Amino acid sequence: MMPQAITTNAPADNSPNLRLYMSVLKERQHRSVHLLMSLESSANYTWLLWQNGERVLLPRTLKYMEGQLPPDQFIRLRRDYTVNLDYIDRIERPVAERMLVWLRTGECIEVARRRITPVRKQLWHHPILARYVNRRSSVQLLD
Image (cartoon, rainbow, N blue to C red; front, side, top):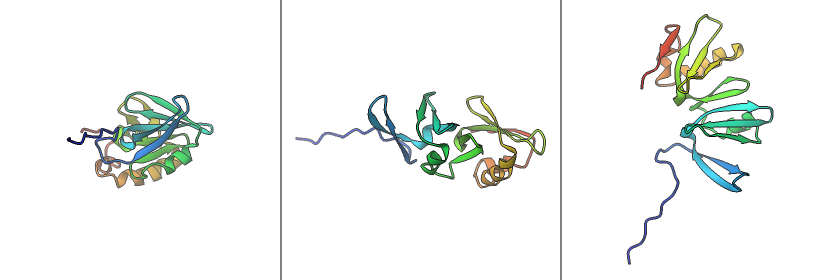
C-alpha cells in the first residue's frame, strides 16, 4: 500500500511563522510573517492587519509583538505603528522634517519626527527602498 501524502497549512514561502492563540476559536494558529502587513498599538493590545484584510486583536503590547518578528522585515514608524517593508507603496518627503509612508492599501502614515532618522537608516539598508530614501520628495515604488 502506498503512503498517503500529508498536507499541512505551512506557507509556500520560507518566511518565519507567527504563533497566535485565537481565544475566539480556542485554537493555536501559525501564520506566515510575510502575510502580516502592519501592527497597530491600542494601549496594551495590538491589532494585527493581515494581507487578506483580516484584523486580529491580541492582548500583547506592540513592543512584545515586535520581538516576535524579524527586525529586517518590519519598521517602527511611530509609537503606535509598525509596518512590513514589503507593503510600502511609496515614501514622500514634502519637507525636511516630515516623512510620509504610503502603504499598498492606500493608507498614509506620517513618521514620527523623532523616528525619521532611524527610519531612514533602516530603509537605507533595504535592497529596494534604499535608492528612494534621499532622492525626490515623492517616489512611487514599482514591483
